[in-house]
Length: 269
Image (tube, rainbow, N blue to C red; front, side, top):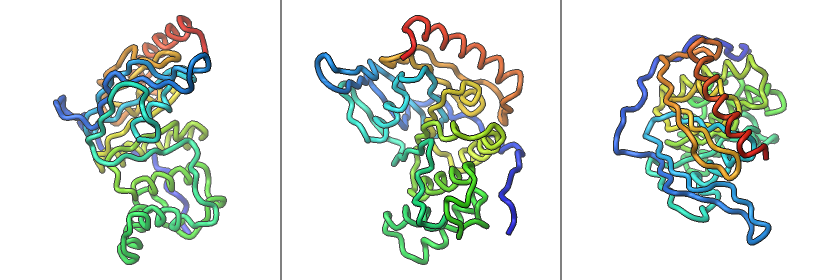
């Protein structure tokens, strides 16, 4: 059995999506409040944000600023208290920090489950599972169970399962936050390659500003709770990008300084 690929060869370069009136995601003056009266928690306030088809947008902000809530609203897992959300870029799915694989199923079985829910024929499912596992470089691990895989490999399975849902919008909630730096670096390369190959629209939540700058076409900074869009940064850095490059570091410093200003103004939550 061969070892999993650990190549860090750069993904193919990709031109950011052109400015267009077309939108994959629209948030129009969206607010979200949990609870009522004196116990109400204002998570998001008057958020307006558009994401173009095929764009890779990263959300950053202090803990508790509503980044995850925003993903849940886009995915339809929560309803906004006020405002309007439009998702026009096809179906969306959420990939979380934990892989949430079923431990009693094999790698192939976890991916196949998503295809069963689409009522795909068994013959077509087998071909599709093989293709998806090859796409995430896990073709040799189809018969393994989650406990036999590393954390990075489990996240690759979760990514294959998300793609099995035939989504066009991928919502990622700190999917690499619990991984070591080397594994995270490898998965950054893999994610950029998949994004370039598939044309997915990606909204990616992270606390890591350098990760956001490395991956995103645009970095959206949210204020401390309640979350508001306070600034957006276009990432005009040629791909492929390295997380240690001077260009990534310089923009990361600018965004981090702006983030710290927000944290000092509102206080941590």
